[in-house]
Image 1 (cartoon, rainbow, N blue to C red):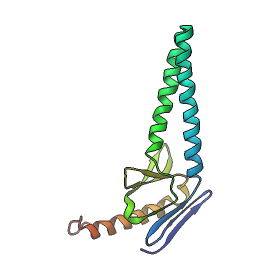
Image 2 (image 1 turned 135 degrees about the horizontal axis):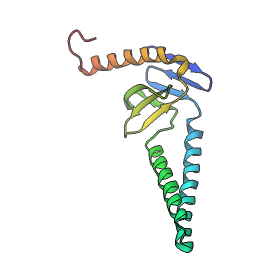
Image 3 (image 1 turned 120 degrees about the vertical axis):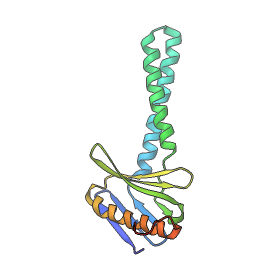
Image 4 (image 1 turned 180 degrees about the vertical axis):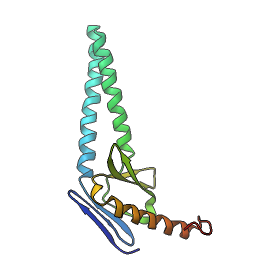
Length: 150
């Protein structure tokens, strides 16, 4: 397929013949989320430990809630990728998704990692057409199509 570039404020996605290049703030956002969630888990654990000293149940329940909630965020972020370049053979699937009116692109990679690209509202229609063409080409290449369905 030809090289295709989609640009918006703060985000650029380039689909080349051999690889996909994404320029956005994913690496910074990944490490910021990791750091802040780690701090909140630490605070929650300290709150639970203070419960054992003081006996106040408020410290126990708020500490558990904070620590477990942010532990879930940490685990979810460990299954995400923040790489800016990857080759087509690493891509398992590409999906354009919508949650609460915000569109984002999920690229499922080998190793069960997901690369999420946000802020794509400006070019979502063009991106949807490109993804549809890519999926058709993949189906033809893999032989996963029925006569008359393309």
